[in-house]
Length: 337
Image 1 (cartoon, rainbow, N blue to C red):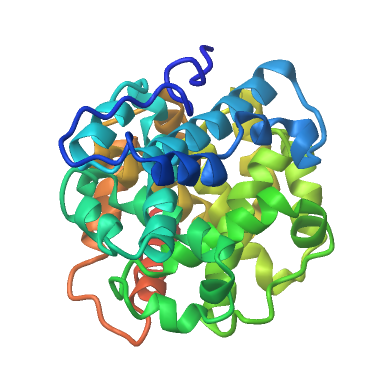
Image 2 (cartoon, rainbow, N blue to C red; image 1 turned 180 degrees about the vertical axis):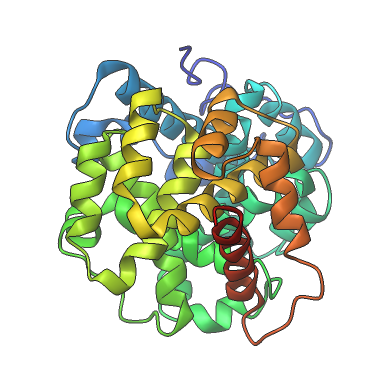
């Protein structure tokens, strides 16, 4: 796999748009202070246990791609220029770059006061096909900025009532990625999260478990088994999404996970279906998404994505996202009877 660092890094973003700030000393200082090193994606840096070389390389490349997208978002003050940079990433990995860019845009919205609609403009424009990944990326920013982190409810009220929970999912992944021992091994949830936010947090933490366990089915099973049983369905849902979206699983891994998940298979299937929908909407299908959906959902990725669409019809409830997920899980549960 080719590293993204040579194409995307602090020296690789050349924005030709007018009214950019690249000639500005202040902007160069901003870039220098806010940029993230690609080394942050290394397993040794994250404290993750090493795994099979091919799998570990895969997950480190995904992390590098996210960071590349983030740095591109920090450095580019022009939407067109940012999109050109993101589109240089190969299709299968591109969603991670968009996710990182979303984090950067939200950070800039809050730290650079003369333009506070970067994220909203990007989401409504060229970023729209990646809307799910953009919301997750925004959650990373919430986790990183103290004044947002301490008041998550007020922050979430600014976002779409259905997809706002993906920000908390991103929050959960962030906590697992940067504090796996605390969140993944000691099972800590930030005290500021209450109610359904704790469930959404576990979706992201479950996704991170797939990375932290380096796609090892036995490690994943043991990691989830250590959590309170009430948290396990949401963790498995996040794992299902990660397996289907990020990949890294062999056929044997998929079969082992299918056995390990037990009664929580509908939750895992729902996560895989979300991944299928995210890739379908963005137009970046992947063979590993197809294989995961066949194993967990019992159908091709296109049909699994269609299940998520059908579950959106006449959506009601105080927390539409929860109802959406429950409907999808119910559909997969009924299909296996």
